[in-house]
Picture 1: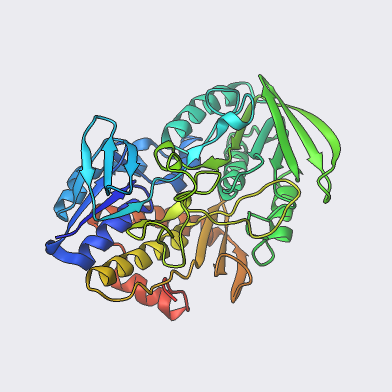
Picture 2: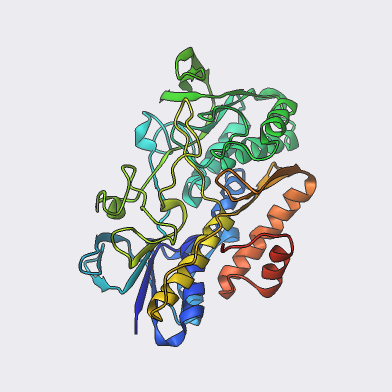
Amino acid sequence: MAHIVIIGASTGGMPAAYEIKEALGSGHKVTVINATPDFHFVPSNPWVAVGWRSRADISFDIKPRLEKKDIDFIPVAVSEIKPEDNRLTLADGRTIDYDYLVIATGPKLAFDEVEGLGPEGFTESVCTVGHAEKAYAGWQKFVESPGPIVVGAVQGASCFGPAYEFAFIMDADLRNRKLRDKVPMTFVTSEPYIGHLGLGGVGDSKGMMESELRQRHINWITNAKVTRVDAGKMHVAEHNADGEVIKEHELPFDYSMMLPAFKGVDAVAALGEDLVNPRGFVKVDEYQRNPKWHNIYSVGVCIAIPPVEPTPIPTGTPKTGYMIESMVTAVTHNIKNDLEGKPVDREATWNAICLADMGDTGVAFVAMPQIPPRNVSWMKKGKWVHYAKVAFEKYFLSKMKRGSTEPVYEKYVLKAVGIAKLK
């Protein structure tokens, strides 16, 4: 009997647990280790931050859901990984041995890289549900006495979609409250142009996103490096295409949400260059395996992917939901093949499907694969995307509660439009 241990229980770890257990059956043991006892649907955090959702709406207790599928669950953080011994040490002192390890930790949020950034500083965040709840508390105070807003993503960020979403959601909420005319808004981003998204653009994302910002009277600064945040003031250096500073901005704000850069979590980053890159992200080969330790796999935001292209200000590459699910499916097949003495040969497509809410409308894009050059690249806008995002939230939460990672109808609908998880 092999023991497969998964670190992390979010949009990568939970599907991995269900899919691996289903593929391997009762003859092998699967254990999930997570720092907290709850699952949170991270894409809904921008809604939490304006009070359109609560924690209860987007979270559930993990343990009973996994136990129904005969999957063990330990709600304790991992403090050390010992790959030469195939062993983990937990924060409570326990040790766990494994035959295969799947790292799905998500990122460490690098607020410390910009002075004054983050919930412990002067800006809000929607990266976790706890941050989103704090952001909502600030939002409630803000709408009582509105003023300027600064929103966006700092240098090194790799997840730009939620910044755009939150800008548009705040805009919609303020319009609903008849307060929009009292709130100047500025979108600040390290992207070289609006709609770059860390992906070199998708379809007509540049024109479409610029148009949306313009129609909603949201100003923007691109190629932006946030140098410092003070109480009520953000210091931003704007650069040209050669990376030279062309203007220094001091942006006043009464409310701000800025996405940080990501790093690898401490227990993973501590292993050094054999496992991770300089930012602490897990190195993987085309089969999602670590090149040195072939029984260590990784999926999701915590893996190392180079930027799609050089940019004047550093931008990372996002790892979107369906892309992560394709990684999970590849890992599942490869662990199963290895146990059966077959070659490890399955590669994830890294195809991307994204629904971005804009409060009362939305944009959807498909990038196949996510990293260019692509076979398919398009972006569409419409109210249908807003409703599709709401429906997907309910659908994904239901899947995770039931332990069904790819229902038959989903599999065949996606196949019919040419979207697959494996090459």
